[in-house]
Image (cartoon, rainbow, N blue to C red; front, top):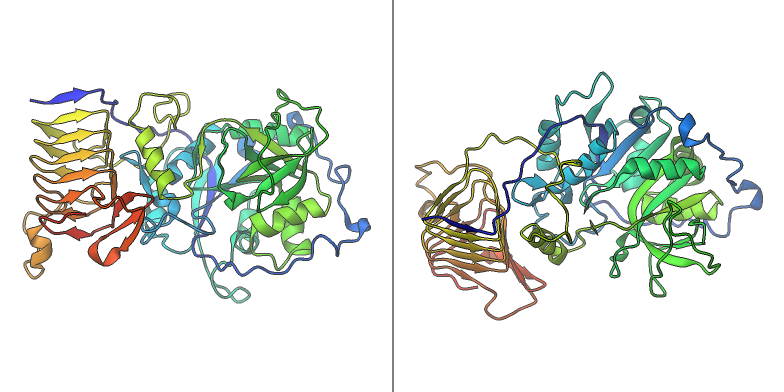
Length: 492
C-alpha cells in the first residue's frame, strides 16, 4: 500500500529561450587584496559626475536581449558550504531533488529576456561546466543567443589562475565585447531568488546611473559577504562598506513606490548583483584600478569614491544567499512546505529550467511519504519519509525512516555486479539500507549507508569534523560526504 500524504507534485522543468550567460567560477580565488588608496589619492578633477555619464532614457535603448549580457560567477569569495563544495563549485550544488543552484539564476535571465549569458569557471568546475553546457545548449536562442562557459586560461600576457572576479572579467573583456552591448549584468550563480532583471535595467537607465546594485530590504539578518550600502533618500549609494556599524534601516523602493524624505543615510545589504555600463566597467578595470582583483571589495567602493553615479535597486522578495550549511538546509526544507515563505519552484509564469535527465518514474512500494519532494528515478521500498527532499535515483530500503533531511541521490544506477576487489563497497550498495534511521541530515550524492544505521546527531553537537569517517556536523546538521561509506550498525 502506498500512502502519499500532503505530497507536492513532481517538479517539472521546461525549456524556453535563454540568454547569454557568463558564469565566473570564483571559488578558491586568491584573495590577497591590493592596497587601493581610493579615498584620498583621487583629485577632484578626476571625479566622474552623472552629467558626464549621461545615457539615453530606457525607451531609447535597444531591446534587452540585444543590449545586455549576463556574467554569472560559480562561487563566492569565501564559501562556507564545505563539504558540499569539496568536489564541486557552489553553483553546481543540487537543490530541490532535481535542480542545481545555477538553474535559478539562469532561469531569471531567461524570464527577463536576456539572451547572452557567459559562465567563467575555475576550480572544482567540472560538474558545473558539464551541467551548463548540456542543460542550455540548443534551446533556440536564435543566431546570437547563447549560454557560454569560459574556463580559466593562461596566455602569453596572463599566466596563472584568475585572481578574483575583477581579474577574471578584465582578462575576458576581449571576448565579452564580441557583441555590441550597453551593460553587463554581473550575477552570483549560487543564490536562490526570483527577480525580473528588466525592472532593474529600467531603473538603471531611467536614473542614468553608471552602476546599479541590487539590495535586499526584506531580510533582517544578513550575511556581510557582499557588503552594505549607505544610501540617501533617492537611493543613491553614498558609501559601500564590508562591515555594518549600525543596525539596518528600511529604505524605500528604488522603483519609486517607497520614497523617503529622510536625509540621514540608510544601510541596506548588497546582493552582489551589479548592472554596470560597459564603458564604465572598462574604465574601472583598465584605467582607475588595473591591479584590482575583486569587484565587490575593490571596484565598487572605488567607483563610489570616484564620484560615479551608483544607485541602489531595492528588492523585497525572497532571497537566500546560501551563506552556510544551515541556510542551504532551510532552503531545501521550505520546498517541502505549502507556504509562500520560500522559493516557488512551481511558478508557471517564471519557471525554473534545468537539464533533462530522461529518467524513469519513481517506484514506490508499501511506503508512507508525507510532506516531501521526490525526484525522478527513485526506488522507495517499504520505507517512511517525512518532510524530506529525495534526489534523483535514490534507493531507500525496507524499514528505513528518513525525516527532515536532504537526500541528494545518485549520479548513476549501480551495476548489479561490482568489482569484487573492493569488498567494502560491494557489501554496501549506493543508497540507504534497511532499517536505517536518518533525521535532520544532508546526504550527498552516491553515499553508501548500510543497514541499521542511525544518523540523528545523538550527542546534539553543533560542529564536528569526522571527514575520515565520512561525515561532518555543521550547525547541528549531519552532512554525509559525497561517495562516503557508512558501515552497518553505525550510530552518529
